[in-house]
Length: 298
Ligand SMILES: NC(=O)c1ccc[n+]([C@@H]2O[C@H](COP(=O)([O-])OP(=O)(O)OC[C@H]3O[C@@H](n4cnc5c(N)ncnc54)[C@H](OP(=O)(O)O)[C@@H]3O)[C@@H](O)[C@H]2O)c1
Image 1 (cartoon, rainbow, N blue to C red):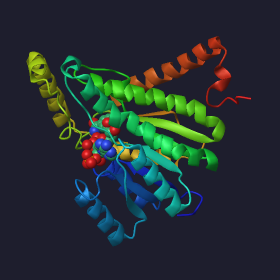
Image 2: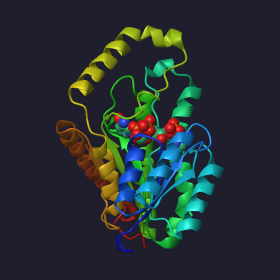
Image 3: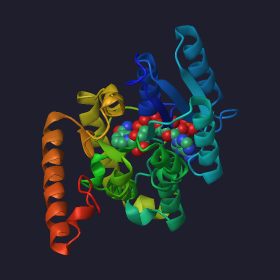
């Protein structure tokens, strides 16, 4: 791969699911890839050893770095080690995340904070660590892994949807604020795909309140599971979309990429197009449309 299209990429949450697929595909395509995992000596020792073995066997430029997104020092250290080793950083994929499914009322505020600590503040910490470097370079991209549930909220995923909506809002603000520095921020809104997200889901601890919604929640999960079993999605659709964004030339990346079955894709893309037009119209009326990405601020 020629140097001008080869990217230095860090992907958080690379132990499983979309993150794991993304790091392998990027590395096989010739990029220099840093697979960020939390607790490498402990819970992710096996995943880290497998990535190292893969890199060695297939001669991939693929490296494991420790990064727990709930810890700013950990994020700072990971970004420092990548930029020291590679000399630059072209793309950061904020993929680490999880889901706290269940009726909103059943969750204590502390549980909601834990949901946001990974899905929202995790991305903020990693961005805060990476952005001085990206601004200084005058290029680079933050790619967030979001969800269509941030655009269309269904029951029993309220905390998750709220966290992904917050991630989408942060991405839109970064998109506008970073454009003058030549840095991009984009988000992939994914539909449900089979990964470890279900196995890692955290249910409400308050069993009494959770139980009050038991029948509805049970039927909801059964119907969702049945539909997903009939038409299982391929999670490589999401990792391939992330890889495509990494490889898209600077300045040409779309703000939102939707990855979903055809009917859902069309509906959410229509909503996103409308949201983009609404943002233009409202900011024009506020007199601040010159500050939106693509418009010079001075
Ligand atoms: N699968 C879907 O249906 C779907 C749909 C839309 C969006 N998403 C989003 O896609 C992203 C990846 O999820 P997935 O579906 O691939 O699920 P997954 O297989 O469970 O992967 C989640 C990854 O996040 C990591 N992670 C969790 N907490 C972390 C922390 N504090 N620090 C660093 N890493 C942490 C996990 O690491 P450990 O192994 O250490 O736990 C794991 O590597 C998430 O942001 C999720 O919300 C998923």
